[in-house]
Length: 101
Image 1 (cartoon, one colour):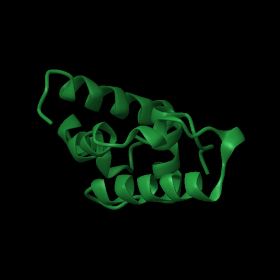
Image 2 (cartoon, helix red, strand yellow):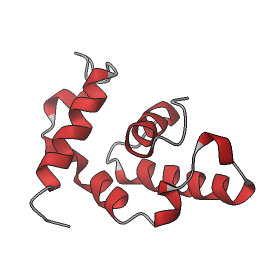
Image 3 (tube, helix red, strand yellow):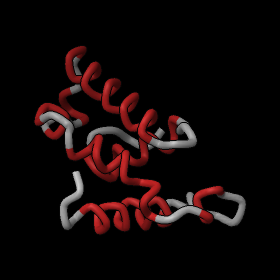
Image 4 (cartoon, one colour):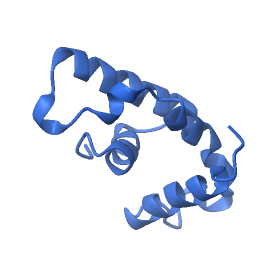
């Protein structure tokens, strides 16, 4: 994915994370450009339609598997690895399907 909205999507994700206080002075993310988020945006853009239909009122075993798989993919897409908090906050902001844990 190298479309015209890639940079904008990276900016949105970066500023969303900043609004959660995840870009503090001790964060390594402060020394990175928004290109750091390209792999995460690519994972989100390539996600199947089933993830967009999961909501808190319909957690089933199948939907849990979809959520878990997406969490694993997002975590792997972040170059420095990712905590569960970071992954679930991204999923909350993008898909609105899980609370930030």
